[in-house]
Length: 338
Image (cartoon, rainbow, N blue to C red; front, side, top):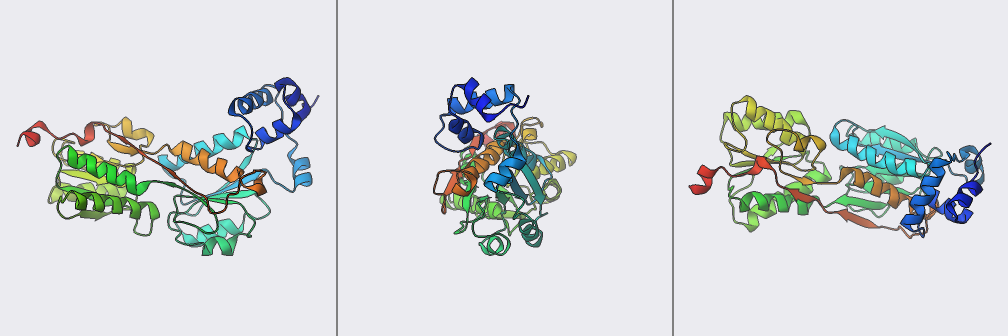
């Protein structure tokens, strides 16, 4: 016999309306009650009849996710957070990667109307709302992740500037003076904010000129930067704008026979899972990447068009990264005594 929403309400000892709000991620449901309802629904193997729900509500119960890439630990963690939050609410995901191309992103967005109820977009190279306006209907709920300010959509960002400022200050405070920075792509919002934080921290400390090496947020560009430091002038420390470049740099330095941190200290940004397991473990700015994805979906579900009750016009939220100090940024005793 099919389990109905009334069965879930009866076992959870709440009203049908409360069950509906909980399963659809709406507000005004206490977290303890929501968890109880989700557990009861899972125990009873309650499965909403999506076809009937779509006909009655004109909703697909599917969320579109458009990302710049799907490769690497960052995007794996991001999708883990989105997927977990979606499954808790009985939602499906339609995922596309635009491979860093604004044209491919526009094409992916144009394919979403009629197929999804709302869209999550990570678009660090999107500086305006033109692409969204051209691809989506005005009433389509959108949450942007790691993007410049928008008049069109809710924006959820990591405090990249503050994180880079904090990490550069840490490297200065422990005794490093010549700090090189491996930057991300020039047209990338995250990369620009992290570079700005690095530059401002050096300027505030009167620590000398910035030393910037161009990277691409991947292991290969980090490896190339590490080779350049091994073969030429060496900094005291390298701050890579993300962990994947920091790991590539680490491999290049070790291949060249250099020791980290004895010869060159190293730090990254994001705290991907691998960062804590390499030797030496990587100092970094921790971004709760899975939470970033889950939080983006929660914000999307607060839109009235998604069944939420909040006014989401031009909402901006920031996630503050946390400094994680590990062995890779230590100052060797011989340098600190000199």
